[in-house]
Image (cartoon, rainbow, N blue to C red; front, side, top):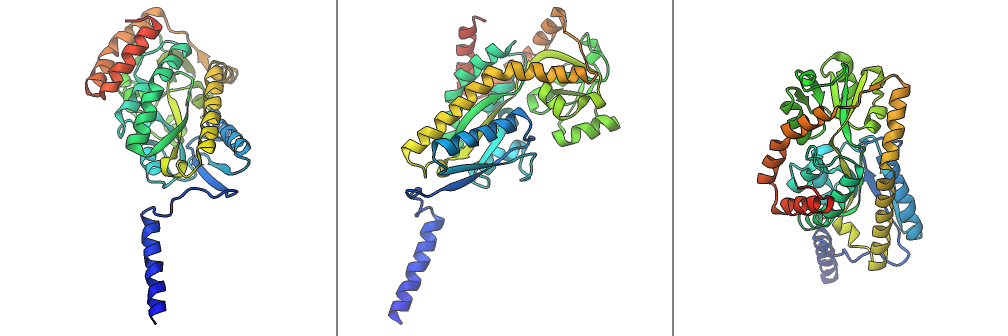
Length: 339
């Protein structure tokens, strides 16, 4: 009887320790683990491809100890603003996320889509390189996750039914936006923002709920915009960046050598995609052109007017942003030689 009570007590104690993380001692030699990676984008999108390529690299450098399986197209049901929380809590082990889409929880990540902060891919890359150490710190210290890589979308422009050549042409637009910053831009030019999930964009355009979209060329291809829109204004409004993150508790189960190997794999993916983003953009635009969308190059006057009209958005954001944001901006302007 005493032995039975003793064994029962040990069993209960073991369960309590397990629930509190008491058995989280890392992977045993030769033990393998599969991490499920959430993504809201198709496998064929360059973001989905990046997760797949990263998984292949990780499997190779860890000799199959770490396997990564992508669940694309929002198959797991998690997307948008909730992604920091679901990775933090290990509801999903890994997720690809647009940084600005989670800026409601972590304001610093809103930096990535400040309107007209950069004018080309090189400037956007410089900003990311300066911001990345700050992103890493806040992700680990506040959100219990490790950033494995940060990669770009092509720069977002305006996709419309009617040709846009002036600010006047933008008044009254019903435009789908993907984050709060984009919504403010649309409001600043006299339009109405609609924060629809991407899965609802095509139907929204078909039924007239919206008549325009602020997004990238790759999303235009994913959404087959040529079936419902006619024009593209390739103006450098903003540039989304996506991070692939993993729950920090799961990452910390790995030995130092394995951690270093998968971080190096992430660095290689990051460098590769940044080096190809202009090519990805051009190829996607070529596809939209071949399918009937007309690209309208913006005038210098229009670019200047949009930069001026959105200055208040940038300044207002900095007033409430974490202090690190101003440090990043100052370093960035110094690096590109702009005041």
